[in-house]
Length: 289
Image (cartoon, rainbow, N blue to C red):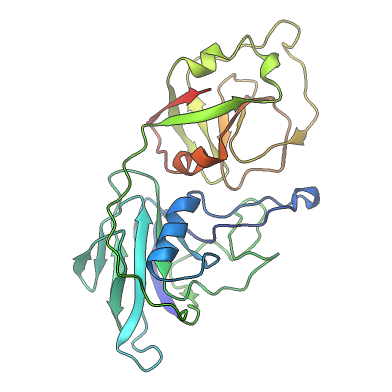
């Protein structure tokens, strides 16, 4: 059990898989916004791929580890990936992208990352909250899974896996350049060609959360015959680039709704949606077909 001393702007429990295959019930997939980062954090501490960890937005998180665990002097083993927030354990700086032992009774604290948006903290044994519909992920829209983490919460930690902690020390991956690869969406013909979407940069606005983010730029004009036309709601997926009446696109992330009533001009490749989950307000995005 670890005790949350500070939760930062937003901290949630997430796993990599989420809840796939339930869109017909109105349940989205959810799961980590940057799945690669959480998967790597779990590997670094020797967890199963299905283990849940913490998704921490813009740092500010702090937790106290128990004074004893399984009659050993070790409070836990952790790894931090994703946005490189400054990490201290017991007041001493620790490196991300490597397994770090936490002494019994020590406090772990994260500062604000200089780049990226979401950091991932894996604890050996995983965050062992009760699964809901097969996942421990927090879906902030549907209200499924554990509640958003708050100060004073006590988070259970599962038993340490049988495999040893790997002896690795990795360099953080290079920072993405803001280019997102896309395929044309089902309603691309509603717009006056994809060129305006593809051939100029867009700016991420501060209207951003786990559902997605809005972009600022020129209005994407409707093609002749589609101005003012209403679209019945249809299914949307992670990475959908939806265009509301303002003409400024919205990119859907992990907690997107399962249907939407605005036309989807393009869809970000699934492999690039993890990088999209690390974009911050004010950063520029380019779409590449």
